[in-house]
Amino acid sequence: MKINIPEIRKQIEEVEEDLLLTNTVINDVYDELKRQRKMYHVQRHSNLKWLPILLEEVGEVAEALQIDTQAAKESDADDLYKELTQVAAVAISWAAQLKEQKDQK
Image 1: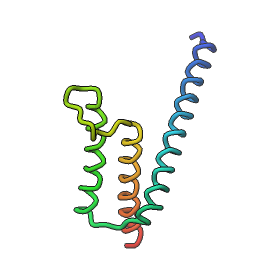
Image 2 (image 1 turned 180 degrees about the vertical axis):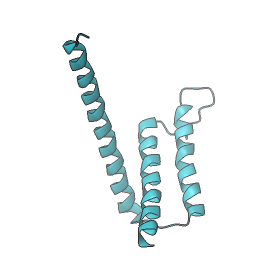
Image 3 (image 1 turned 90 degrees about the vertical axis):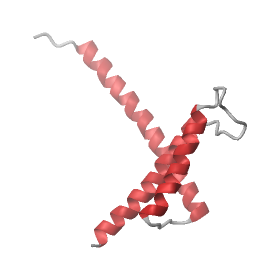
Image 4 (image 1 turned 120 degrees about the vertical axis):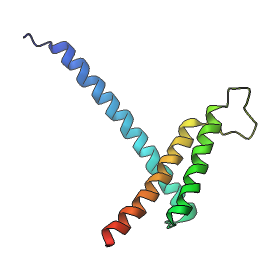
């Protein structure tokens, strides 16, 4: 079996590019977490309270998806990436609370 060095290098470069992009997204989510904490401080809610908070953010993702459609409204969010980072930040805050509660048991 012959090893294809150029192909292996290409695959490594693709993985490195993807990891750099992923790192950028994670940093953006972290920045959103900091923004939310500055506004709301550390949030602690029941699961039944967290769910509507998360769903409200997911709803804004849905609005951003329809921005270029006939169903679009002026009030729709126009930055899908921003809305997705907000969804991720809320989900992380909820998950952190659950982890904290689990670790205290």
